[in-house]
Length: 66
Image (cartoon, rainbow, N blue to C red; front, side, top):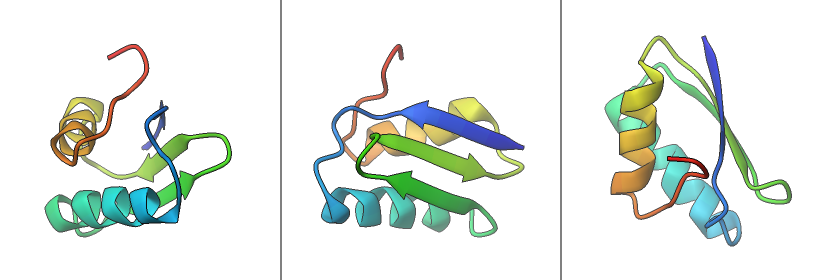
């Protein structure tokens, strides 16, 4: 299931790499796409949306509306 989240605190490619690494460390089968321009993170995974949000927040990023 694809989960799309707005992450306004993404500043550049370093942020994108940190988010991708954080998610794939916890969910190794996850397909992660971070769009720096639109500040969105799309994750195709079997994990719950809640767990993905917690991983992103633990990496130090804010999620719009969460």
